[in-house]
Amino acid sequence: MANTLETINRMQADGVISLYVMGGSAAATFYIKPAVPLEADIFVLFPSQAEGSVPSLAPVDEYLAKRGTGVEGEALRIGNWPVKFFPVTNGLEREALDESLPGQVDGVKTWVMTAEHLVCMALRNENMALVSQFLESNTVDREKLHHMLHRHNLGPQWHQFTGTQPER
Image (cartoon, rainbow, N blue to C red; front, side):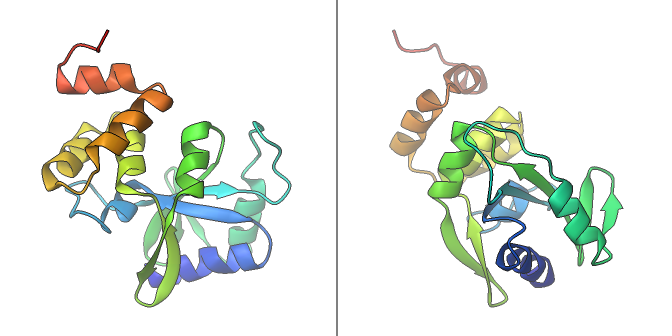
């Protein structure tokens, strides 16, 4: 994973992206041992990205193609890791980027989503196994999660997941 992160950090240093945050099961390993296959979801903000725009990932694809990165299904293989890139396009993703935490993998710096953001993203993507693992691990601040779920309109998914009725 270190080689993968070095490449992403180099992409940032070269100005292809301005900021990034790691999500997905690879980010979850900073908190739990996910039972799902490891892949890194990298959410990126581009230097000239306007608020609310949905930019193309072409600059990322072009940058990595010049460095021999292969395509693996919907992901790109950087080093030994499948990586999916996503432009930051909504409030949840922007908040996850803004509130990301610094981490390290084999001495390489990276930015990781908080546990609460990872739960929200997993819930949004219907990855209920990952949501369950986080909740069972007690690594999530439930009060913070509750506010975040409602702020990002994930209350209905949460109530469906937990089998509870919404508060009135």
